[in-house]
Image (cartoon, helix red, strand yellow):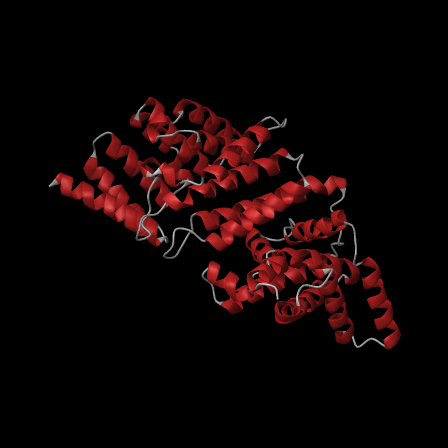
Length: 405
């Protein structure tokens, strides 16, 4: 008898490989997904009592193919041909299995889809989450998420995208889409944009797992390495919340609670990514994170180097959130007024964004203008949809109000 936990882990690992193999053969995403889901359910029912088959991936493909041939109501000759073809392919070389999963990820993250649709489809087809689980993660009704996923699959079908790796002239754009989707998925899990919990470990964990798979398949791509290094900052998670789920900022975290092996791996990968030729946004963010991780205490942080890296990142990305972080680094190096000066242009670029108010409140607090700082903290608290962030900001404002009395 095989443990249920081991079987669940194996099914999650095999699901994208099996779906990729079936989609590649039949070219019908919807029908293939339904058949694979039935095969996974059959495995979950039979394997715990009967034990693992000699070739679990082959068993799943064969079962899915049988479901498809039943669905298509093919004649006996076609069924024998399809099952015979499946059996001939079952042993398959490991690189081909990995390629199927990678191609499936590239399909789900096609540039024709919106990031929201790509994330949903990736979680459904590659990560194996149910529509209900994905809907819960993004705080929308299950019917809404089902429609989003269905539209994404229909768009792929209508586009006639072949099941293969992108052609060389398409590869870079498609890779950027894949990495962007994984980055967004991780960020939502690392700091949830809404709800009562600061973390969504199901989302961040899946992002890390999928990015590890990407790195294993494309180890020479420094942007993939950089993204994985950046995600390994999830190692700080045990110290980011207190006993009651309250947010603890980086400067106040108990660094002995960080996952040190994961920190070490992230720092090593960041160094590798930065030495890989052209440096992009993920490598720079990973390098900044590595500098924070390398400081035993908050006061040991190499802020001048972090400020320099944020300068490079700002020029490369043009992202106003990067400018917001650069303002904090500038305040740590040159004083809070320097940081406030950098915030001024962001009023037009981030109007009403709670993080702009939160950072301005922090810098005003640093120069002793506690009344103005409290006002900005309250404004930020009113705008955020994250309950842990709201509670943190409300508490900061309340403490400053007590100081002002």
